[in-house]
Image (cartoon, rainbow, N blue to C red; front, top):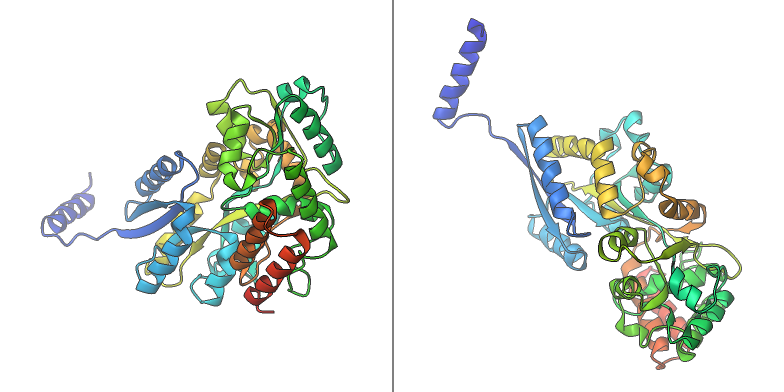
Length: 406
């Protein structure tokens, strides 16, 4: 050790002794709960980052999705919100309108932007500015149980909704629930959008008004209701959440279900002997799927923005991204992770990737959550026989237009 370095070390020791050593900055991070792997992942990342950046501490709070938005809104009102949080990208516009989300373009150079797959970065770009980074991405496809299909004499997955109904009828004759139809809790509206989009409809039109109550919407909802009435779904769809349907599928109690790629990991862990395949969402006149991103945002009132950005830079490097995406069962959002052999050689994941050109994202509009609730309430009322498709959707469209500011 040189004389100068020895002096520096001694000075640091004395400073620490008297409590005047430089204090580490603390970056508070809220992570949405995806699975039992979420917490351990972020704990590991926080430790790795701190080891490389000892002047910055990362404190992570994992919050369930059901309470995340309300918690963030409450914390923001009280000035106790985190510096960084995962959010549903569909919430982003409201954070931007309320001047709560920090624009990120000033922190990013072109090389950083080029890390991302453009399809997944675009939903968080509003008014020419980037307000979020895509940490999670998924699309939707049809899972089908090959053994149950074989019992019913079905040799291939259905490509159309007519074929879904035909196959479900064959499965019903064998005492098997054919098509899993979600009717409860988060994404109840989305499960109907699959049919709406493939019938050529949309949720919000180009004019910003609710568009789901048109002919395509009525036909799609009538078709779902017909399947319920004919016993082609599980009993009582309004009793089943997305997770419930996934569990029925893993247990071999329903033959078809539409959901995201993360079910692949669940099946591998919980039902490794399940013989299943994955196919595109059935269509009527056009192909469609639902694509979703969750974004990481930096809040404008953060007092440690530079340190927070440094953590985000680390979070979106190759290995942290691969570890997160593989662990949670999502699609890659960065080019580097997409090139990993785990993704390039995974045929089941590639089914979802191939659907992305026909994907619909939740529109970046104010009032989206209220619109989704209006749709969910309408389709549930139809599923249980309390309303007819056309008037139920018309009433929901009126509520949605108010939420959309129209």
